[in-house]
Image 1 (spheres, rainbow, N blue to C red):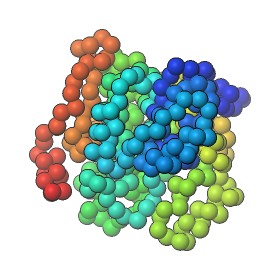
Image 2 (image 1 turned 45 degrees about the vertical axis):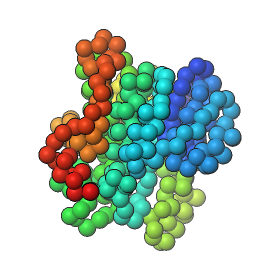
Image 3 (image 1 turned 90 degrees about the horizontal axis):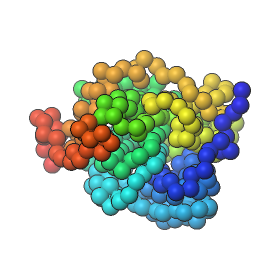
Image 4 (image 1 turned 180 degrees about the horizontal axis):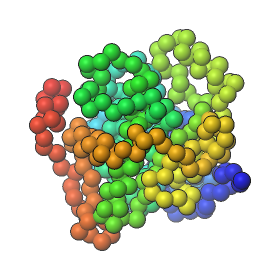
Length: 321
């Protein structure tokens, strides 16, 4: 079996790619590989100094723009400042098992950043997207469940891995529902997802727990692949000839490492009833909705991202003050 590698990425000259969290880890590796093929890379990053440092090491055309996925105002500002087509939107940025904390808008940090931030960003940019939306999940989604009664972990004792798993399961359900909606309006845009397997990045070292971070460091040295290897499933999901709602992961060692291929999901990650409900709740929480209309054959209908009125959303917003 031929293993996918960066050599299989086609020429990307003239194509615009946005990569969130492209200043480090698999996001940086994916951006570097696409830039080397001629793409114009927009590094959408919270720390623009780190973004410029990363961009300086890439070949080709790069641009750095500030984006904080834990702040809806920042996401709206980024989207409002965008002009022109987007061939690829890679929703890569994420956080993993930090101590319990909240986003600027009062959401649990992992769910708010990993899912709601990318949900809002994608829908605010979707009228510009002409190719694919790739969302990076994790095999850790298997640890999670979507608890609609307590999405923000306000009632339950906080469990970092379960919260992380919920956010990564949400990434897969978001991809499934986004693809369903794109098909529904006749759009040729595809939504795909990927997971990096076990990749050695700095993502694992923010738990606030010395023992856990030490275990992660040992695991990275002994078992993990590097960021370049971890980026291959993202690149596969971005450029390979695959159907919408495909899920890519490493090809070897129980999906821990080695190349990329299409991988299976659990039934929980394919539950379209949960996916639809999560989408509706995400619209309510972010005040952002799917922007495309079936009335336009090109699927570029101008439905504005207006405030979604609902008792649940109003209650949440009012409670946050």
